[in-house]
Amino acid sequence: MDKQAVINESGRILDLILKDELTQEEKDRVVSDSVENYTEFVNPGILSVRKSVSTDYSFVEWEDEGAVFRDTHGVEFIDCLGGYGIYMLGHRNPKVIEVVKAQLDRYALHSQELVEPLRGYLSKLVAMITPGDLQYSFVCNGGAEAVEMALKLARLATGKTCFISTVNAFHGKSMGAVSATGKNTYRQPYLPLIPGFQHVEYADAEAIEKAIRNLVAVGESVAGVIVEPIQGEAGIIVPPKGYLTALREICDRYEVCMITDEIQTGMGRTGTLWAVEHENVVPDILIMGKAFGGGVMPVTGIVARKHLWENMKENPWILGSPTFGGNPLSCSAAIAAIKYTVEWDIAKTAAEKGDYIMDKLMQLKEKYPVLKDVRGRGLLIGMEFPTDEVGFELAKGLFDQRVLVGGTLNNARVIRIEPPAIISMEQIDTVMECLEKTLKTL
Ligand SMILES: Cc1ncc(COP(=O)(O)O)c(C=O)c1O
View 1 (cartoon, rainbow, N blue to C red):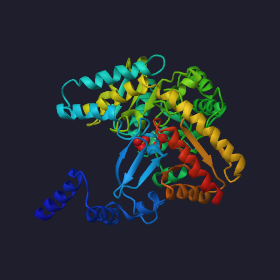
View 2 (cartoon, rainbow, N blue to C red; view 1 turned 135 degrees about the vertical axis):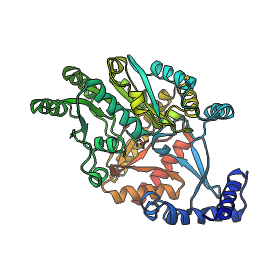
View 3 (cartoon, rainbow, N blue to C red; view 1 turned 90 degrees about the horizontal axis):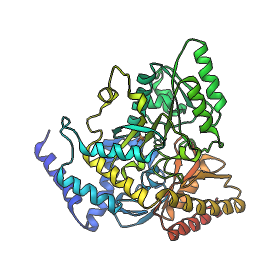
């Protein structure tokens, strides 16, 4: 290691972070540094795969607020991707930032040994805002990590082993989560995965029952059924009404844990605080993430019914606890996010703005047959195009007009509109105008 070189390079970067305003030369340098660093030190593939709408990579994210973010040169984008669901309350929501800053000035991370008050407060609030008798929380850092804990808890609580998941589901990319995920692209490179996962078609409750029955018939046991209330990355697939209710009955009948992955659908995204509320269903384990940290801190978790944690030889907390899980900074952000979401009825806002967008999209669908389908709920909306290429062209056309949208991970034909709930009606209208302009060119 060249000690002086490390000090110089890190010092140069810290100067950039600490500066209020960059010079023109510094702005250009950040762009060229970023492309070089991604190529040399992140990995070259990621530029072409992940950042493909800006083919010359000249846009580098630098600052954000509300429903917009700006690049180093101050070019402003309306964010209709919303960080794949993170930015329900907008970018750097002032109420969340204020609380996180105050907590940062008190203490940032925890000793790991003492009782952590904010984790306790957050868990109480989670029990207050989630349906039915969901009570005990486990707080962690990433969505996949929360999915892992949900799967582990289901196994510990039931003493059973197998899981039923759905084709095209997306539950994350860690080994347990990707075992539940239902897309070959993410699973195949890691086969064999965790044994005991069976995938059935989404939106077909009977298929789930059959899978459980067959597994039991051949001597296996089923610990849980894991589903997204609306499949997000599969291309915004809304199941028919009654699907979740039927799953609840099946899970009760076979004494299987019903696990709903609300990482994307939760915190008001679909027009109710949790998407299971559309059917008044109480799952055994509900998984939270993305918008849970108010768009400021990475924080995820699960909340489960009390009885799952009882009569257990092992404490799932001890078996699962991650070092940073439930840290005070993250908890402070989640507590602020909960207050803001409930106080400002963000779910209702999402429902209303979602209806408005959906109406406009339906009109565009009539006018432009290239837009094959429009579907979704609240502010989780998908537009389906005939091919991946057309979907990509649409995303690129919008990007050129400074509107960010994105594909869905498991279905590139579907472009999502997933803006923050605090997006203004003027911004929505601008997005719709840009969309129509692009549709004309396809
Ligand atoms: C429904 C669902 N589950 C799990 C995950 C994985 O979350 P993370 O990327 O934070 O691991 C995602 C991410 O998109 C998701 O949408």
